[in-house]
Amino acid sequence: MDGTLRLFATGLVPDDDAAATTVSVAEAVQGHLTLYEFIQWPLCPGHGHPMRPSVEHDKACRTCPASHRSICAIGELPPPDPSATVT
Ligand SMILES: [Zn+2]
Image (tube, rainbow, N blue to C red; front, side, top):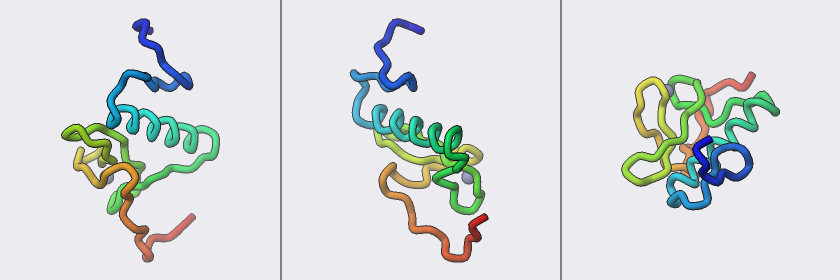
C-alpha cells in the first residue's frame, strides 16, 4: 500500500476524479460478479470476453482487452445481440 486512502478494499480512492471513480466502481462490480456470482459481464461484442473498464480521453469507458478499442461509455452499453445464445 502506498498510504492512499482506499474504500471497499478495491482501490476506490475518494480524491479521484469522476471518470476514475466510475472505473473503480465498475471494476468492483465486475470483480464481484466474476468471483461471487460466476457471471462474466459485460461481454465484448464480437469477441465474447468481458470488457475492461478504463479511462479514455477523460471519460469512463468499456474497452476490449484484446484490441484496446473503446466500445462504449460506462452506463451506455449497446443493446444485447438477439442472435447471441445464453448458456
Ligand atoms: Zn474484445
